[in-house]
Image (cartoon, rainbow, N blue to C red; front, side, top):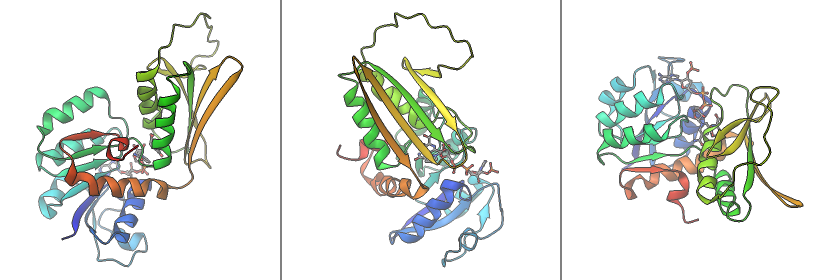
Length: 264
Ligand SMILES: NC(=O)C1=CN([C@@H]2O[C@H](COP(=O)(O)OP(=O)(O)OC[C@H]3O[C@@H](n4cnc5c(N)ncnc54)[C@H](OP(=O)(O)O)[C@@H]3O)[C@@H](O)[C@H]2O)C=CC1
Ligand SMILES: O=C(O)C1=N[C@H](C(=O)O)C[C@H](O)C1
């Protein structure tokens, strides 16, 4: 039996890549495509894929009611994601979430809504290289206390800093024993030193030509260590999304971070 999947945000940059990936995986079948753009059109035809028609629908709840999928894959935006999670959990359906903007308070809410009924994977980044970069950075923080993060993304990204940068700072923060700065800084231009997460400065760059990139720079006496990851296209995220869907059967409740589904 194939895993039946509804993609939420199906006509977006990530949603389209997920629809394409689903068409390439024998065990997966797309049964619903939810988006607020191109409503009523066949997503497979829009993407030039030779598959049975799946019309884009506007309302997630109505789509779930109609097609009753095994899994929802969610890639919309931070304003919509919590409502979509709540809706999916009301139908006791498993969900893989790539949309960013989910806070610690949101995670608590999701666990309360779920009561361990559905299986949920939330990953700010599905690219294996990014997972490794975060893991290496977390390890490096045991030895080097001073670190800043620069994340660079395409100019259509709504949220800043990126979910990946926040997650990286959370992971590094667990290993960081950072004394307060001795230098009293004067920020002559507000924001020049970036935003702070777990005492780590995060700087966000938005430019056309970029996809998704991050550099973690550690500084020490007479040396620096740079860990850099580049997603040069959205196919970089697809093996991670496929893995998360396939691993749902093995997990209980909420898993936050793809690193928890692989043997690092
Ligand atoms: N975890 C990971 O590995 C990755 C996560 N992301 C994250 O995924 C999210 C999506 O990114 P991306 O694909 O680039 O964004 P896009 O804006 O390209 O795609 C989102 C799509 O969802 C649609 N949408 C908006 N509101 C709704 C709604 N209420 N119901 C259904 N669809 C809706 C959008 O329509 P409209 O354009 O009209 O708003 C758009 O078509 C972001 O949060 C991004 O940070 C991105 C890459 C990798
Ligand atoms: O919006 C994007 O493009 C990306 N969003 C995620 C994030 O905010 O970390 C993952 C990746 O960086 C691409």
